[in-house]
Amino acid sequence: MPESKSIAQLCKIVKPLLSWYRKNARRLPWRENTDPYRVWVSEIMLQQTRVAAVIPYFLRFMEQLPSVEALANAPWDQLMKLWEGLGYYSRARNLQKAARVICEKYGGIFPDRYEEILSLPGVGPYTAGAVASISFEQPTPAVDGNVLRVISRLLEWDADFSRGAEKKQVAHLLAEIYPEGQCGAFTQALMELGAVVCTPGTAPRCTACPLQEHCCACAHKTQASFPVIPPKKPRKREDKTIFLLHCGDRIAVRQRDAAGLLGGLWEFPNAEGHLDADAAEAWLWGHETKAGKITKIAPKKHIFTHIEWHMDCYLVLCENTSPAFTWVTKGELEEKISLPTAFQKFSGELAL
Image (cartoon, rainbow, N blue to C red; front, top):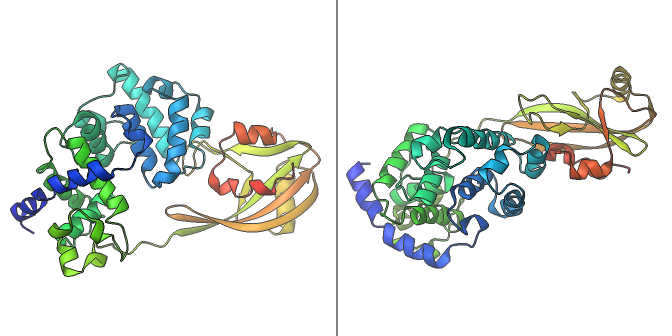
């Protein structure tokens, strides 16, 4: 599609979209002001996570870590507990890394240039564009899945947007139409439209869309064909056996290696593969655990982005607290230990 034609068509959406947003924007806690710290944290939390799920996490995070300095200096266990259940824990690790860079390199003041924001750990073009436009009124588009869906339908653009080059082209086109003095509102309006009106699937709310008369897909009834989504690769399956180990009022946990999936978080002890009763007893013996009663628990599954865990589980009443593990009370597990959702699925089986 010729660039000049695309820009001319997109120019038509600015006024009606901003007018619609002023009347219909959801009241969200990170929209109370344009403080870059709040905007940045919210955008990182919202990656791969629904708005409704993020709200309580964001409020709790801001209450306990209200500034860049507070985040930079937060104890690891506090940060992980605040993030517990949100998933994609590398986001939290990179948040703290970036906060420390801001403190060390910029004196605790959030950088206001797109290129400087983009250089922070864990920040990509989308997040940098969002912060620079919303907090500093710069014409820097934040192109996420919602925005790509809106633009692809408006222009009937059949590109494969999973490729970086295509996303850059969308960002380039949008940068040409950003309204001076209203950059932040325009960024949020595009996001909002994709989130609540121009939704995925076969039934977008076209009759409620302020851009209906400018949308090629709506005119041609081709909304369901856009954006073009390439087939996903099948997820890798991993089998595991989880052990819920009890000794008196104590429960066994251990900390995962810093690198890799769920790096640095706590977990219930576990083994690779599905272990039968004899293999489970041998595993316990190898970890200096003298088992009393062993009960098989119903299996569970947890889905990550590219991996599926299929988990068997044994509830074990132990006669000793093995030094191979850290032993905590149920209260400590709930209040201090950051346990990923994959392991929380078995928390209801705890006997204490």
